[in-house]
Image 1 (cartoon, rainbow, N blue to C red):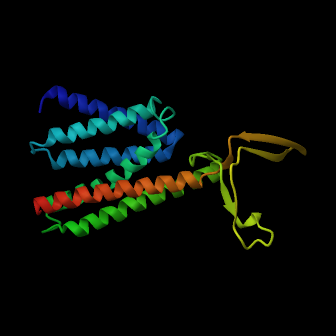
Image 2 (image 1 turned 180 degrees about the horizontal axis):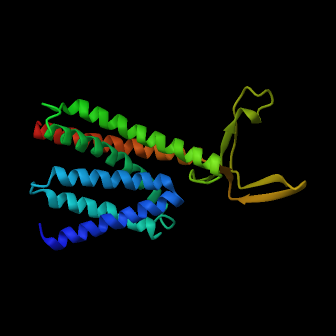
Image 3 (image 1 turned 45 degrees about the vertical axis):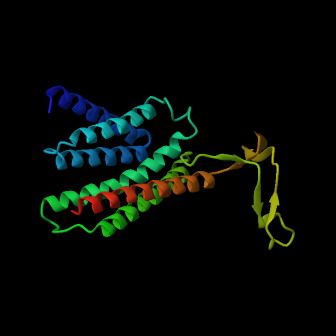
Length: 234
């Protein structure tokens, strides 16, 4: 491997490590993601040290780091409505690859004699879904304890609830909501806050959207890992 490439990749990893440390003090949920990404690539590096396909690992690693840099320098996160969605899908995909890399590593150090594709894929899928679920639990906990807004609020124009029915037993729907007015007290004074363009949904839509795309990423990662394992017959 060329010396310049080693220096370049080392500097990139150090930079991501610096971002990780910074995020511990600003958004430790993101720091966890950075830590998993670094760990996956470091394990992959050692696994493929003598493999001609190492350059493909570096290309993939550079792509992930590019996504991290766009987030850190605020190039896409606030400008693209699909950035956060893509990151959750990517997390689901990478979590499956992490399990794949982990078991391949265990086999190389003779902890396993044979790897069964379906079993490894199932473990990877379950791990990925668990990561997505725990992430949402952490987001909710941080929002409630530290009064943050990691679970982004959505404006909706339609809601349904049994609270709107007279007897409280039948679900009633309200359509075409264009404005919401909130009354609240502050130092014994009644204040109002007007929300234009709809009703403020506080988190549930964001949470379920993240879980859905995490599921999609997990399925894609599982299919990829299963096909690779079947083809290699490890």
